[in-house]
Length: 123
Image (cartoon, rainbow, N blue to C red; front, top):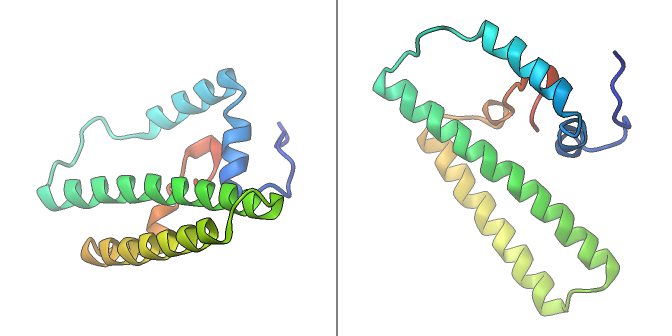
């Protein structure tokens, strides 16, 4: 089946657009669970890094969505100069902290692009 989402959407928007078809999402989820191992490697270091990877991925996804919303609001003229400055500082601080956390867990940007199976890459 062809990809029903427009090709010019950013990757995160494509994922949200495609999740709208719940039946297809559930079929894809079934395919993913068939591939997953029956047992989890519960090594302490792997669990910690995996959890950090998941949390940082979600934070990065939310950051991207918030940045898009901020850009829309700036372009729409609904933000004051002070609000624009504050948002800019906030996003810069978040980027700096994310870099520190990725370094402490030995993660790269590519590690935060989790493969969602039939939905494709997250970011």
